[in-house]
Structure formats: structure tokens, C-alpha cells
Image 1: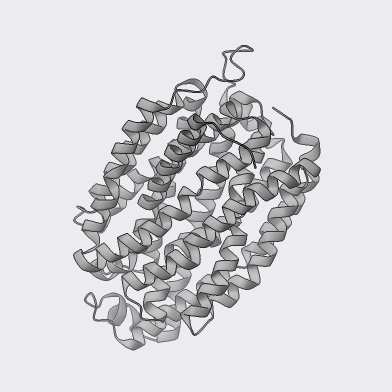
Image 2: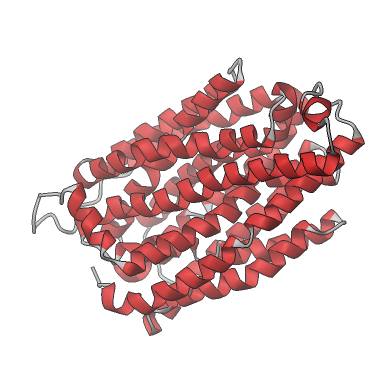
Length: 439
């Protein structure tokens, strides 16, 4: 286990805290999504667009330009600025008067992932040597499952007691404080290539470089398919728990924290150390390890969503989630070894683009679309008027069963993309030794 100085520990703690708030603001829509759906009379497709597509569209627009800025300007200032923006937009989401206004606010939250991850990964690559990057990013990325747990437990309790609007306001504001702490206490790391050239490669050069990297393309595509399942579960698990097991928002939030957030934390914490050790033996473990983990996660995931008892769901989903997320942060750092230093932020943005847009954007919309149609098929004629158009809280048991069954079937159907992810990771493994460098 690598040792860290006090300054490094503060760096890990503060950036991990910002990553936590990033994921809280991103996840809270999943926690209160069922309440929003009933209040605004939305379909699962609209919920998928709200929780996934709205976020990823804004990411698609700003992700690459912000990454290019991170190649040239202060990454500390960029992260501070986008943290303030996504925090304010989350708080404003609680004041939205319509679905369209809420959709626009969620697009604004997307600037968080767009500006944060590429700049963070670039900072890590300049501040820590190559052998420590996977561990460092995995430790900072623990903010993701911790944030998911906080959003699920605290957000669910606030939403159930005071309503979903106040929950959005409460989780949005703390980010402004951490942004101020970042810009006043963390210095901008010196770029390790500063003495070689001050020029940043043109974006076309970055695209050509990565387009000629099979390892990068396979890793990114594989992570996109894993994201379809992971992000879909993150967005629709609480609605499934409320509909299928008739849990309250606070109860569903606790189950979410145990079966998804805690499992993600365990997987990421252990995966970073495991893959760091494996990569020292053979670089191909950068593809082999994720492939093996996803292959094991696939049957556990299917078993989880078909359990009649939510307690069994917790057990199976814990194992599946820990495996799915064990090596996700490490894959991000592995892609950094495939490019020159001044291309790292752009490479991170493009990898996140593939993972987030394909996984969260397209995946959540596909899952919501399938859920609506399968629920209508199970219910029969009149599903839209009887169930979707029903006043909040007045859905009949038949509506709940149809909605739960449709969501369950759609989650099972989309899970089969994990087979493609395994194949892609294995293909990446064969190319890593020839492409990776020690920069």
C-alpha cells in the first residue's frame, strides 16, 4: 500500500468530497425520481430522459471543450468553477415549476461531470507517478458510492418528510463551500511536460491518436456497455423497490445504500489495489481483470432483480455491483498511459464521453422506453390513462404490478450488453502491452 504525505491526504480527502457531492447531485434525481414521476405524471421514458439524457447531452456539448481548457489552464480553477455551477443548478431544480424547467436544470448539472473528471485525472497524472495513479483515483472515486449512499439515505428521508423539492435544494448548496476550499488550499500541480513544450496538441491530433489506439477504443466501448447497466440500476433501482416491494422512499434509500452504494465502495477500494498489483506483472490484466469481473457480475445481476424478497436482492446485487465497479476507476487511469501528457485531459473526456453518453444517456432512455412498453403490455389497454395519468399516490395495485414488472423485464433485457463488454475488454487486453507507455 503506497504511503501519502499530509498534503496528499488533504488532496485525496477534498477531491473525494467534491466527487461525493458531484455524485449526490447527480444521483438525487434517482432517489426522488418516483416522487417526481407521480407528482408531475411522467412516464419512465421521461424519467430516463430527466435522470440520464438531460445530464449526458450537456456533458456531450461541454465535455470536450472543458477538457481542452484543462490542457492549457488551471485545473483547480476549472474544477472550482464547475462545482459551483452544478451545485447551483441542483438547487434550482428544486424550484422548477414544470418538467421542461426541471429538464433544463438537469442539463446544467451535467457540467459537473463534463468539467470535473478530465481535469481531475489530468491533475492526478501530473501529481503522482504512474504506479500510484490507479490507487489514487480509486480512493478519490470512493466519493461516488459514499455520495450515492448519502443521497439515498438522507435524500430519501428528506423527500419523504418534506418533499422532493426541498431534498434537491438541500443537496445542492454544500458544493459551493467545497469549491471555495479547493481554490484556496490546493495548488495547481506542475505539468510534467512543462519543460518539453508549452504547446497543446490540436484536438484533431488527439482524435487521430486515440482513433489509432485499439486498446483505448475497446476499453471505452466496454465501459460504455457496463455504464448502461450501472447507470440504469442507479437511476431505476429505487423506483423498482417502491413499485415491486412497496417500500417507502426512506426504506428504498437504505436498501439502495446497502446493495449499490456500499457495494460500489467495496469494489472500487479493493479493485484499485488489485489491478495495481496485477499490472506490475502483466499489462494485459488491464483488460483481463475487468472482463472477469463483468462476466461474474452478469448472472448475479439477473438473480438480484428477479428475487421475490428484497433481502435476497440486496445480497445478489451487492456482489454484482462490487464486481461491475471494481475496475472502473482503474480503466480511466490505464487510458492515460496510452497518450502523451498534454493529451490526457482530452483522453479522459473522450473515455468519459463514451461511458456516460452511451451508458447514462442512451442506456437510461432505452431502459425507460422498454419499461413503459413492457408495463403497458402486462397491464393491457388503458395503462397510460389509468396508471401514468393517475394523481400522485393513487396508483392501483394493478398499475404498480405492471410498472414493476415492466421495469424488471427492461433491466433484465439491457443486462445482456454485459456480454459485449466482456468481449471488448478481452480485445483491449491483447493491445495494451504494445500501446502503453510509462509516462
